[in-house]
Image (cartoon, rainbow, N blue to C red; front, top):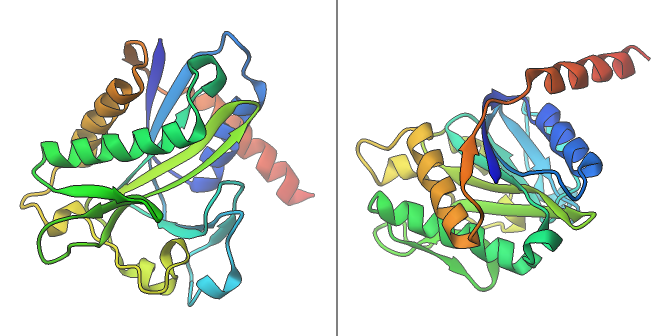
Length: 233
């Protein structure tokens, strides 16, 4: 069984620490989990990230992380999905997972009437019709450790895209970002998009029946306490 969790809106670093810990402590019997979350404003710089792509970050924090890829932005109104999967157990390759995330996004967007597709030269999903054709609506950055995946995909729903102008998104100076709210009126809400996306991802990966469960708040309370201890030195 796959457990799906709605983390609602949370600070990026706490979620990053939580999914890293889950990846490091899980065993062969641990359930696969899919976390859906909306982050407070943050820039995240992947392992391939270059400082030159941080143009003017201003008061938005920059977090250096251990996923692949370059810099991106997360903020309210964006769906971020973290598939915490045992790839070896499921016999899924990393490229297979990237393709599944892209395929699920395209199917979800099609459900809401938006035409999009992946590109062979740059991971993610891009519009294929209308005045914003070629603009990027979803970004992907993954990490695999101990045969298990973490980090994931960010889908722009109804958010402030202005912070993307402070960076070269995913390392591309001319990359234009777009969101569902610029195409659909009214735009679907966060929960609607999350439900359809997860359904399509499970179908694409042929994972067992999923069950939505609440997050264990004690995990985040413990992580916050540990971080406070480190800060106090």
